[in-house]
Image (tube, rainbow, N blue to C red; front, side, top):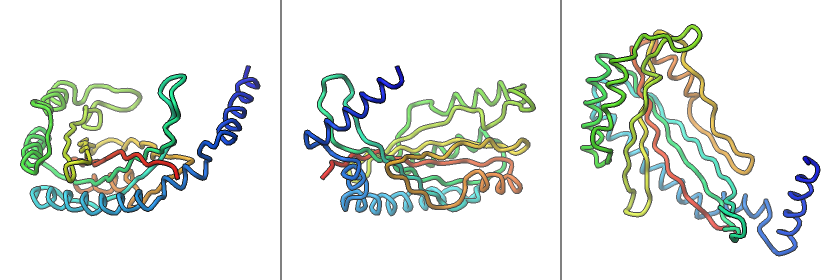
Length: 228
């Protein structure tokens, strides 16, 4: 069965080339096109300004440097018989951490007000769940040699438009001192991937030597580009 499937993949690839479909190099060219690079430069500057705005409004937090992660994948037809879109989609994420002390619930409420004051929109009562879960479950056993803490909480999400056309998402999550920081795999792609900035696991671990909590903010957007 495995051999038959591999032959199908090979035949489809050959058919795509024979019919003039995009090659792998075409998809890579789309991911690194002038339009894609211009978007990334524009988004980099816009997100950097948004991080500065939020950092200035949170005097109670120690902000670390930002990191950028970009991955691109080939878009495929969503159902059998649909034409191949011949495009690539690229997800760009900008991540920044802030260490802080005090009561977590108070900081979540305060930051929610700050974010909304800077034109980010979120669901009504979106912070209620993490605050309630932290009150109920903090300290309970949660797997081998771990207890439930801020890293287990459901995150909070916001959104905002850039220039009236580009949707930007903002995700907020937390880590708490007292347990080893959980490691999360970095996004990867065999078509196109780019990473810059510090290792987030190491940065959070270092910040927790000075603060009780670390807030992680992730701004992200998804853009689609046609093949040549």
